[in-house]
Length: 113
Image 1 (tube, helix red, strand yellow):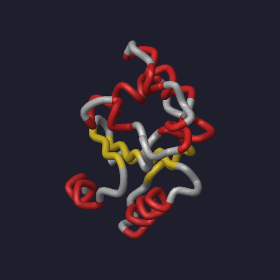
Image 2 (cartoon, one colour):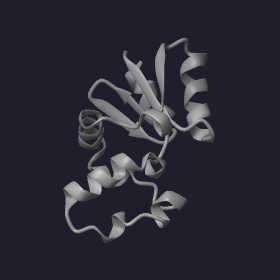
Image 3 (cartoon, helix red, strand yellow):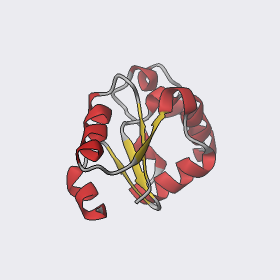
Image 4 (cartoon, one colour):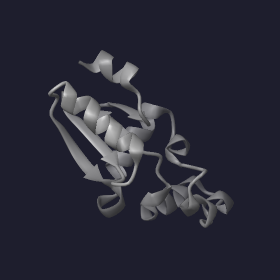
């Protein structure tokens, strides 16, 4: 398993995801999404795994409310805006190769073991 956790330092669910993998002694890489963000390749891989980039957007976040992303017409523009505003991502994003989850999903992670 090659686990990557993309999360925010103040996100409770990110901390729970870290604890889940720590308790099972599964090695993981934690990536602070606020400082590192996601590359275009990572974003497309994760979006394909979860069913579209729209599922990665946290519509309850202040960043989303203050953003113009909801008014953009072209999908490419929306993806660019999402990449430049990492505070809009739902977290944690947990990736295992080509598989990915959004949020705290221990039932799915159990199947990865």
